[in-house]
Image (cartoon, rainbow, N blue to C red; front, side):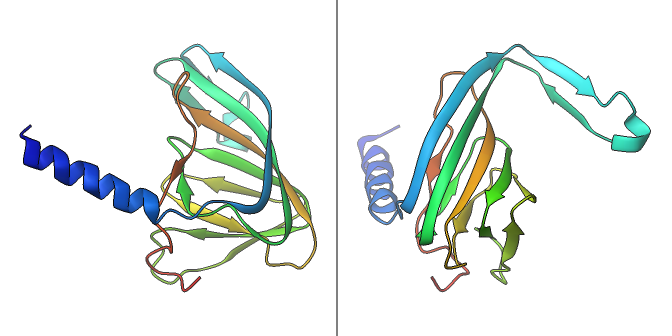
Length: 157
């Protein structure tokens, strides 16, 4: 790669980083992170649960909580793999980065949200504190969150 191309990539990276939106009013706490060997699992009663999962190589699974004050936001971000989010207190609203309609997905205590890893933001728009527990899949030893440019391309906030 020539110097001009490297400079353009560097400049683009600086611009995207400068426009990233950090989390505001959200306190994350890592409960644990463990490496699992490659696996293939299917529900014991596949007809009832219809669930299967596979990892072709070892994978890290990170479990962490997020405490949200009213009006807080995770900032637009992405993950390298799926994230299973359980709301354990209050209500959170999720928006997908590439959803042209900026459709809110409201998730209350006792409900879950599956993030595909393609980009989203979680916001506490409820006026009361909220909390979630997230189970995040990531490459072994690698970061499990990447920042996205803000604002999202389809949402006005």
